[in-house]
Length: 303
Ligand code: GDP
Image 1 (cartoon, protein in one colour):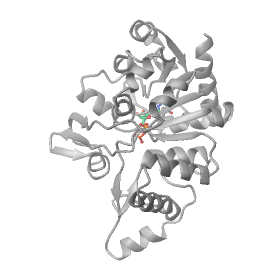
Image 2 (cartoon, protein in one colour):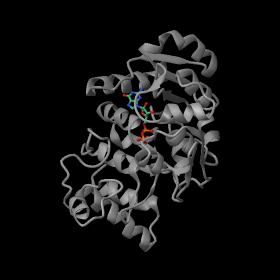
Image 3 (tube, protein in one colour):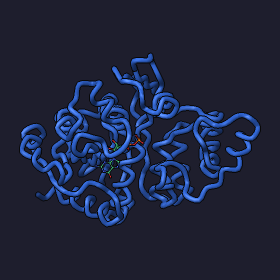
Image 4 (cartoon, helix red, strand yellow):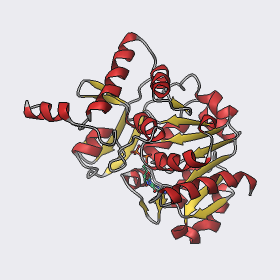
């Protein structure tokens, strides 16, 4: 079994490649939940839904959010009535969220609900939220404390970030066991601060990873993230915004870091930090590149 740690944009692209080369039954995806929150009256677990929709080939790849071809009748009507949504939610996407909200109210855990939804979608891979308990994430900025969505959407990532803090939450029931049972763990190219470290910081995860063969892909190429605010967050926490910064952050639980061809001059430095390095095209602009990257990662074990 192969276990993947995922956020909601970079790693799902890699999952599209893994889907082509791995038996889906042999894949378990552990997903960040730090950004989960209520919007428009429904429980939104954005990264989990992106992973579910990616595994079912129904993700809207333009935004890496929601269902492709979805309608926005409810959202448009809300706007007409003078209550625009903070996050525009598609109609079928909203149904997924309403189901989660109702089942949470009935007392189901998030893990149970996600398992029911992935089975409904006919997804053979396991999708495991990192925790069944919601965490709070606070972005400390020059204009005060913001929650993640205020920073990302309302303030469009503009404030200067001073710190990123999230609360401790317990592991979801299957989390540690899934890592322990895996032959290999893949840390996808996700935001290290708001997607990966929240998973790694959960009690027992770091220790479980240290006992496993762990390969990570750098989400930073050159001196910028491929997309999103990861650079601002890394900077605020004192890490270099480069594959070197990623290596420093992951060094005590990662066996190999895969970096982009563009960064090949960093390879010997990265080898010194984490022990092993792979250099390839990590810019996942086509399914072929995603597939090649997936194969490159899988063959790491035998190198
Ligand atoms: P979020 O949950 O939406 O923040 O998404 P993730 O944490 O999963 O992914 C965001 C990270 O993915 C960003 O830091 C990007 O730099 C990285 N990313 C997105 N696409 C690519 C890609 O094609 N290649 C690489 N190497 N990184 C990518």
